Image 1 (tube, rainbow, N blue to C red):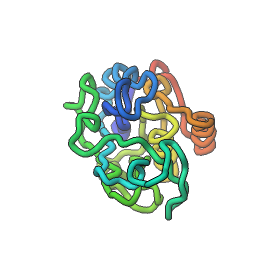
Image 2: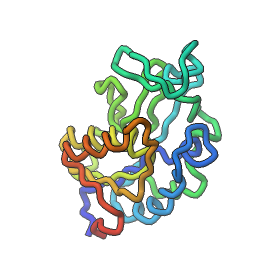
Image 3: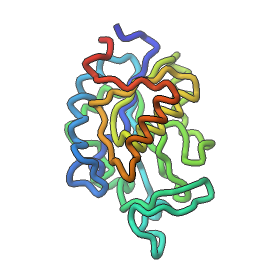
Image 4: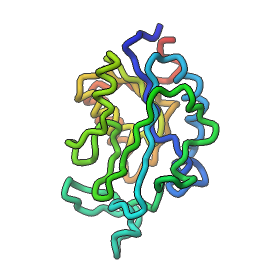
Length: 208
């Protein structure tokens, strides 16, 4: 049985991260059936949504001479220069049309500050500025977090590791995620999650 102190967090299941989107993750839409099947079973249900202003610092187009997917040094550390994606109010920023969002208790929007990116559902990329998700989960009495979404090696990875660092028991549903896998990023993500005792399991193996 899923205990009353467990939350399900679905990470960034948005059109721009799905096939045909501006920053498409291969088979990104395949996470939708898994999330739709699992999320309603949980007492606490959260969706996250990348929500960038058009002038966002992380967009290669806003940094003259920067190529998409290159790395630059930001004040808070290395920053990938991304194609323009998930612009506030755009069709690309909307949730995948088949994602069942009505059962969600909370939608956390992140990356809305122009000067800093936000991979994690808990913190901006300075690892200091909170999104408010931790406080919400604490107020709901949550001790365990189950995650799925996009992409395994970026927003899911950072969210899972931050949740573990904050003291939550964390599980990632492997078949409920897909990865970008850029320059070994998936292997690095799996190693870091293992280092922080994040369980990565098939959704079929998760207690129901």
